[in-house]
Image (tube, helix red, strand yellow):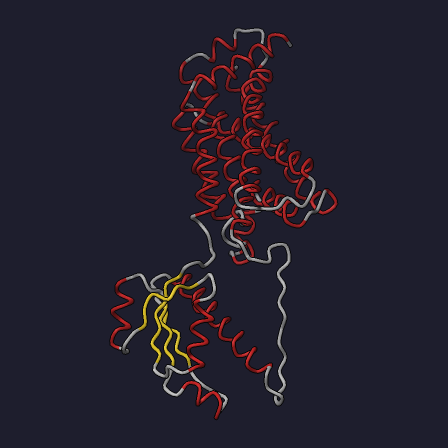
Length: 368
């Protein structure tokens, strides 16, 4: 055991001396969590709109004020005529033009029906769809307030309540997702590169002639990354809670234990990749190709799994981040514990055993 701990200490010192490795381990996670929290979001904020008010009466002014009073829209300009609509869209700053028909308030009072044209820049289809939906919701709220003042007429007004994320903040989705991606990328990539480096530099033979067994060599290589990855986990949780106000409603201890399981799984994947890769470049390429894109596209991090074709849903079930993200969201947002997450935890443990057993077996074959 003394030789083993000495080997682990040597690995720690080797990591701390390499500034590039330290930058990858701690710099990239902090940068990514800040970028995903602030830049990459599916929420609307400060969308510039233009208004063509052909009526210019009290009702249209109330609606314009209601729309611009929200945090979603900024009134960029008021248009003089329809000829200016295409020009304002070509400039690229305005995403929507709201057109009120002549006699807006009069038609609303006399006939109970009036028209508002919502013209959106659909060069970005998702943003255009969100902008129109937000504007329509504000218009419906305005009509609901007007109808509540009338004695005649009956209507059913649905009351919507959003559980766990009432403000629909996108960062609540991105923090668990980016945690899953960072931990599996950093842990697996750095582990695979570390072992591949020994092969590439020819220093693996030095380790083989030492009294250490292959299992001890592997454990000695991955132990420092367990500690460093756990530190990264704590940093991400602190950034999410202190900077982006992502709550941790469940047990913090249970959350950290789940993260340790996921880190061990990521390290076992890294060991598996190292048994296949002969060089550091190949190990990095295999890690990025097999982990980054599947995590982004198929884990439910950004795109709902239910909307995917059945084949991709089956493929998604083989990805560790999918099950980790489910657990993290449940613990952080819903406050659930082992009772509601035991199936996902068993899947992660099963994956750990599979990769560790296969990797150690393969590692012995290659070295002998």
